[in-house]
Image 1 (spheres, helix red, strand yellow):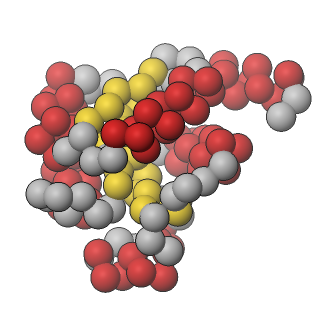
Image 2: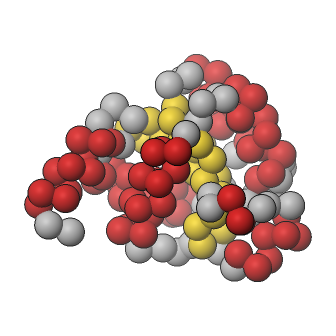
Image 3: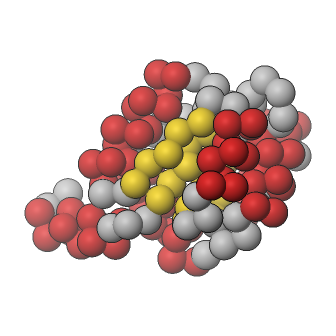
Length: 135
C-alpha cells in the first residue's frame, strides 16, 4: 500500500473502535496488531461473557470481529446479543472454516460479513472499511 492510501485509511480509522472476540489468544494478538497498524482502537475478548461486558462499557464500538466457533455461546448467538447491546456496530464473522461450512453454524455469508482466517492484512482492512462504510 502506498503512503497516501495508508494515510487515508488511518484517517478513516481514527477513533473507530473494534472489538475482537476470539478464544485463541494468538489470533487475538495477530488481529490486534494489524488493526492497530491501520489506526483502529482495539478491544479484545476471549469469550462471550468478556465481549458482552466490554460492549456494555464501550457503546462507541463500531465493528465486532467475531470468531464463529468458540466454546460457550456460538458466534451467531453472541452476535445477536452484541448487536442488541451495540445496534450501530457492524459484525464481521471470522473462521478458519470455509464460507461453505458456515451454513452449519447458521451464518449467512451472502451478507458480505464473513472473512476466512487466516487472511492477509490488506484483505482484512478492505473488509473492515466496506462494513464500516455501510453501517
